[in-house]
Every structure is written in C-alpha cells, then in structure tokens.
Image (tube, rainbow, N blue to C red; front, side, top):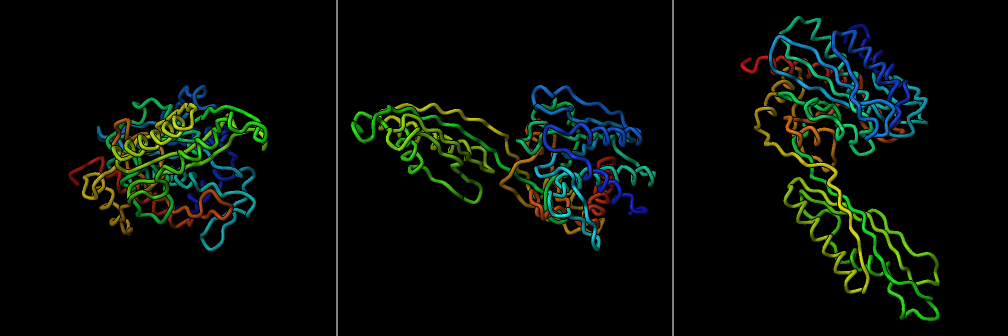
Amino acid sequence: MTDGRLLRTFLDLVRIDSPSRSESVVAAYCGSAFEARGFEVRFDDTMSSTGADIGNLIATRHGDSERTLVLSAHMDCVEPCRGVEPVVVDGVVSSAGQTVLGADDKAGIAAILEAVDRLDESGAHTPALKIILTVCEELGLHGAKALDPADAAGDLCLVLDADGEPGGIVIGAPTHYTFVATFQGTASHAGVAPERGRSALVMASRAIAAMQLGRLDENTTANIGTVEGGIATNVVAAFARVTGECRSLLAERADEVRLLMDQAMREAARTGDGQVDIAWTKEYEGFLRDSDDTLVVIVSDACREVGLQPRTFTTGGGSDGNVFSSDGTPTLVLSCGMRNVHSTDETVHLADMDSIAALIVAVASRVADPSS
C-alpha cells in the first residue's frame, strides 16, 4: 500500500450514500477519479430502464497492447446504507453497527482505482483498460442488463464482487428463472355453499405439494418464495398468487425444472376446475468454465505471483458477471475479501483489498502480453 492511499479511497467511497437507484453522487466521485487517471468517462443512457438517477459508468483508456482488460464492480449498496460510519481496527474495516459497511461492492471499486495507480507507477506494459461500474445491481443486475453489450466487450472481464478471501475465482454461476403465478378460482360463502366455490389457494397448495423443492442435486435448486390470496375466512378464495424460482449451473437442467414446476401448476389448476396464468422470467444465463480454462489459468498464475492461493468454485448466486458472460465477454468473478455482506456485521480487511489490487496488476500484465 502507498501511504494509506487505498484506505483513504475506500473510506471516501463508503461515506457516500448510494442505495440502489441513488448512485449519482458516488458515480460523480468515481467519474472524477478515473478522469484524473487519464480515462475517458461517460455514463450511458439507461436511467429509464433501471430507474436510477444516473447511468452506468464506462471509463476507457488506451494501453500498450491491442488487448483489453475489463474491470467491473457495482456502485449501489443494500439498505441500510445511509450515513455509514466506518471504523478501522487492526486493519479491519467495519461500520459503527447501524448500517452495512458497503464493502459490497466499494471494496471492488477501491481495488480497481488502486490497481490503476500501481500500473501507472510501475511503468509496465499494459492492456487497454475498460472500467464498468453498474447501477442497481442489488435489485437484480438491472444496470448490467441495460448496458450495451459492446460497452463490456474485451479479452477478459474481471468482476470484483464475490465475498471471501482473495484468491477465490468463481468459474460457474447458475441460469436463473423466476415466476409469478396467478390462480383463479370461484368465490362462494364458505359456511353456506362451499361446494359452489373453487379455491384458488387449494389449487396453489396442490401445485406446490407436487413440486420438488430445495436442493435437487449438486447443481440445481428450486424454491417457492411467497403465497398469498383470499379475502376473508368465510369466503372460498377465488384468487391466489405464488412466486418462486429455479436455478442450475446446467442450463438444460434449469429448463427441465422450470417445465416441471410449470406443469405442476397447470395440472393443479385443471384438476381444481380453475385457471392459472404463469409469467416466467429468465433473470440471467449461467456460465461454467473448466478449472484448466486458459483464462482461469491466467488468473490462477497471477494469484500465485502475488502470494495468493488460487481456488476455483461455483456459486448458486448471480452477479453482473452472468450478464457480461452471456453477452459474449469472457468473464470471471473474483473474491474481494468482503465478509458478512448484506448485514450490519459486514467487514473487509485492508490487506485483502491490497491483495486484490496487486492481483489486478498481475493479471493486466498477462493480458497485455499473453506469452509472458
């Protein structure tokens, strides 16, 4: 670390309020920071799609190589994230306890800025650099989904947005479907003429009972999230609404489970003499790379160079990396040292952010010159 620069940058960032859809102030800070480092900075026109008060930040800078390294993080934080008071004790940063810290994902942003400074100070051969800082990631990857795929194109994209110790390399994440199902039955007085009614809640219950839920195999999960319906205890419920999801590292398995859940709901409505409308959404496509994939090897070797033990793993959650990968950019997601994210116990070790900055520098030299 150089004279506490990384820590100062991180503390600046977490002190800026940036809940989802209100990222403009932190975006202005980041835009100025990258401009000061010689980047061309712009914000895309995606506010109408995301509902944010600013677009995604895209910063680009030429290098000594025709190859391009894309570095990405997101600017929004989950609530409660307003008025963060960071506390530093023995190299560990936490919040005062009333808010999240915001290391998710400002640790990633701080590491990117520090890595750019170190590349400049080293005078090393560098690739072209492209920085993508997205909005509304925490609401469902909205910023990345609205981004023009060309803006994230490059030879390798590193998304700095996984928890755990540096050295972690996410090589697989699931294809994810969600649904909203609306069951329609027939209302009737539950005490006077229940036989005239057709309960939408019963249909929904039978559908759920027919589904396989939870962890279905090592790659696949399914879940029912919410069930609601009816208007009173003495009325046969004419309406029920069910939400749920399925996801799998194997796209064909995700499609199979989606079809089975869909069939269960339609059959329950049919046998209950009712109807169901099911709206499915593909939230994002998955990606899965072999541990000996060329890009994984590049990052693994860079880890060893800076004293990190590389470890590859898959995750059941999604990130902006899913979107960039599905759009055709070779993408890996890296662990950034953040722990207990989405809670007021969130922490990050300064040494871990330092390691991530060093790792980015090591990867950049390999992208610039693949033969090195």
